[in-house]
Image (cartoon, rainbow over all chains, first blue to last red; front, side):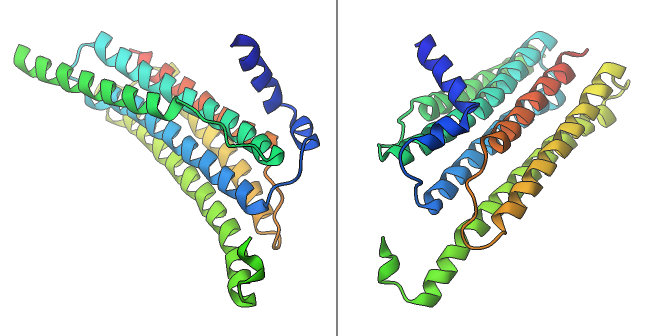
Length: 132
Length: 115
């Protein structure tokens, strides 16, 4: 899996290798791919905003709890941005080769993590209020 | 493809729609990034005893990151406006755009961990 990951990273930095394969897809599919990429970037930005907001607005929480939640959200944001690039490159390549678009568990995993994070924040806020 | 069946006018409109939608997507993303920077600036302004110099620098660098994103977005938007068949985005643009956001999240990290 590490070899696969390293191979993917190298592909991000060598557009010529991607373009050397297969045929140029209909430019509208490439544009749609680009819009998907930007949607993932906005998701990343929303998570970064969440991380910054937790620190600002949930002042009742202990510093340790607040910072951990903020950290997790910020890291999740960075991961989404990285994933956006990978998905864009892999999709371009798949389109050139006429293959199916890459399947991924990332969106589902992100959704689950978001739910978990929300529950943690709700519990922390309620416990904080109960504690005085 | 449905192109052969569609009348000329609709076809032209359809061809113009996709690059425009993509340009708008870049603008939306730039705006979202700007909002994140505003949120970070708010943190500096609203905190009662003020924030450390490190925090201020982190936010300033975050704003710089936004400017870098704006430049990337602007160049791509111009490329998208260049005629009917715009070129595919370069890997450099995509890596740059995502990279700048990763860097911004690191600044956010500094901002949150600075006491």
